[in-house]
Length: 165
Image (cartoon, rainbow, N blue to C red; front, top):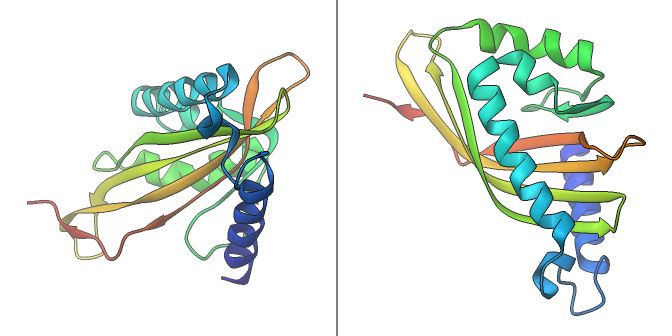
């Protein structure tokens, strides 16, 4: 929990100082082509995950990318992320979809973010179909080959899962 609070404070601080006007992200200052690229990449990431499951999820992460899920410690590296997510994606009742709502650039040509809404469907411990909605933040870094990859991903739910039926 402390890590999540720290990351939230760090992200909020970066957002507030990353632009030259009133703490607005660069995207909010008239747009940036790179922010538009990240919006599209995040949509592509969602589609690839919907089509390919865990492999679609992993392919967008940098080799040393990290994710935080729930209250667990960060999971770092593609192999560790694949292992951590395989159980979820291996469940035929599980689905995870999301829609980015905003994107911005912290350091042009280097570092950016996307944020949005997510929806996870699956079964609870009693076997009932449930939906969990929430928010997420993804940090993207431009790689040496010019591609953008995820260096950090996290999300939180709006509350407890609700019945899907």
